[in-house]
Image 1 (spheres, rainbow, N blue to C red):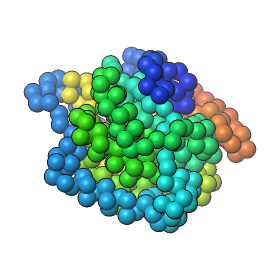
Image 2: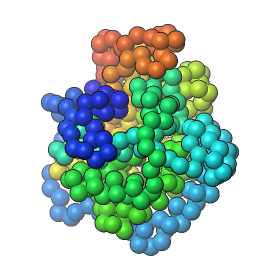
Image 3: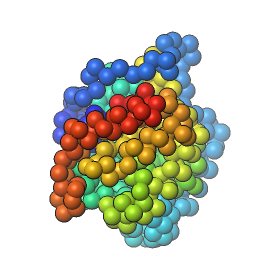
Image 4: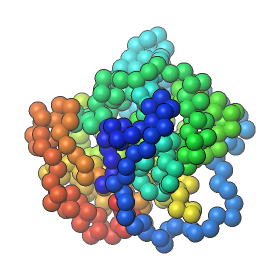
Length: 342
């Protein structure tokens, strides 16, 4: 089981650049080695470097800003004038906040490696699950107002620390700001893979604009049933539809996880937090993954659910996940044919 974002922050995320180490729950996990290359004759060069050199990244940034105000960056289509200080469902207007940043050792083994994934935890969220285990950041918006230049410095600092990649956590509502910071970091020498860690409620148009920019996608696929999704995500009844379309596009861009010398270079890792009474539909999800992407897809089946935020008011989310429920989800994954799951 992977650490939740909130658990990882508590256990040792580097806050404002102060080094600390976090324990991992992946100790002893064995990944499929048939998909892991053992040699690397050519150093991996992220595609965003060529996009910046050609001027294409500047064009993509402009296209993203065009979607920002009135805002249609996510499927909620709030259409608020964020540039004028209005906030939509995510409550974020023109400024953005960063909660914390630093080497993350709670990621999947090929993402975190031995020196961690350099993760930037962004404040606020466009999905707003009522059981959010990170609600202080995603709902309340805890964090520090940050400029694109400061964001670039964070990316470069984590690369200089030796992180194997850099990652934007909960980026959906801030994509143009992040690409602006990324471009500054590229000018400063950034050259490690870029990860996009999302709750899955994405606009297909935005994900298409990220083609060649993002190397590793880490989307959640939380719900398979739209009616259930609407109950627990503050009115996102189309969650499953948009998550499925976005993940298919992510996979089209970067494929299944490509690992060299134990480290991911590009690809998709799909995440699913198992919920009490299988509210998220883990059995349906693993079959959908195999049908669309094959049995070698990397999937993180997470078992750390606990009733955070407002979950106590929404049975059966008012209790922890049982070991039997988690084991059942793992059994469904095996029965579907998956073998790269954690």
